[in-house]
Image (cartoon, rainbow, N blue to C red; front, top):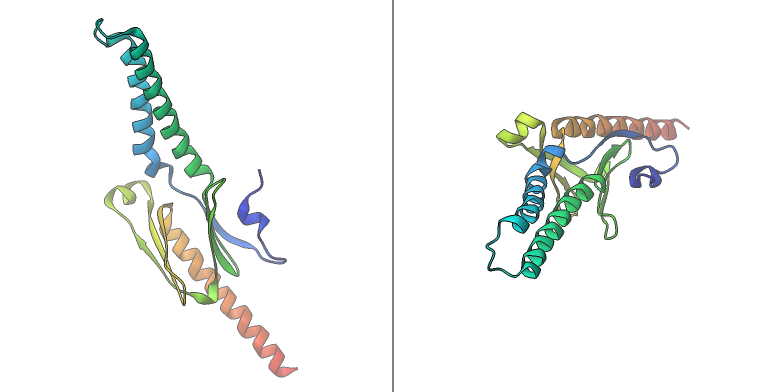
Length: 174
């Protein structure tokens, strides 16, 4: 499957930094899904004998279905989220069927703020807020390596600003 970020690059545009969600932030959902799957197995053998076997089987099936849904939701969330800074813009995409996309030109971005919890510091993930002129803030939860993402923005912004200044200076001398 082709990456959304790569498929939307403009001619000559280069990716400066690309990241995803942190796998560590998905642990609670993965554990909950695994527990539900465990309950599906346990519920078959440990329910009182007075309960109809058909009801026991339905309960076990319900636990299994919800466990699988929780596990698939976490895996899907991880694999369908793309976050990147190019030399011209910021791109964020989440979702497979229903997509949410944020695409901001670097010149419009006013700040990149990070919020890292104690757990996030231990496992290198945090929330990133990107404030842009005239647009709603983009709040992205559980980004892997948020400090590196902010540094990539700063480098991309500086490179873009220098390129624009050089282009402006060259047109004045022409």
